[in-house]
Image (tube, rainbow, N blue to C red; front, side, top):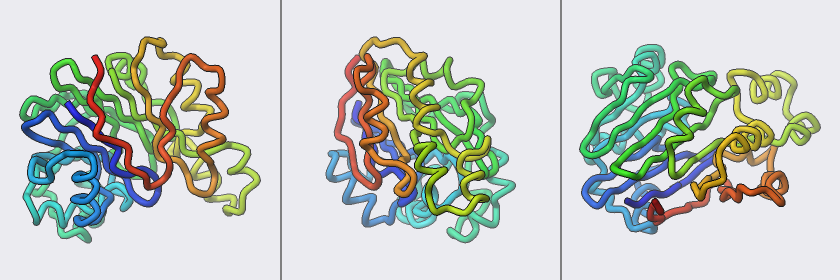
Length: 255
């Protein structure tokens, strides 16, 4: 079982999982050329993609969906609310509501040997979602673009071997930065993003038992990898801090 962070941050987001037979993506915020190149870099075949699960409709998570759908026709999955409320957003990508398979939060979705359990996140995009991805003994937890910790998040995170957790902004940098007040409120609000401190406190509730943690979706303007790493100095947890736009992958799951 292989997995990769193909890209993360406001420039684009895409996460890939491959079990040797089929590959699934969470989000596609890449061009088709960029997606193919990054998959090749981590040893995951482009033609193996069967499904894409969408966290939400914002362009950095969805802009590649239409072109990918017309290229190899993977199944597209999004929350029922996202599909209906953001129909116009998806239409700009050349997608219709009937191009998606809707899911309900908390109800597992089976595709091939993968089972995905979607849970609601708190973001300013309709029906935004996080996921627990399971394939045999490999279990992945992905939580991004949420202003508060979802009710189901801790329970699902405890089941995962590998976790991808948003650590978007440094509170001091955001407050002192040049963003207008309304944008600062959006980012730090309940429908915004997780701060470094929120992510750190969430991770601190997890047992130190060898599970692998990646910190994702770092802001380019209100965060630095150094600020994030500083929070974990001397900590029993040693997460990988994913720099904006970089690829991390070709990993095999260590059970």
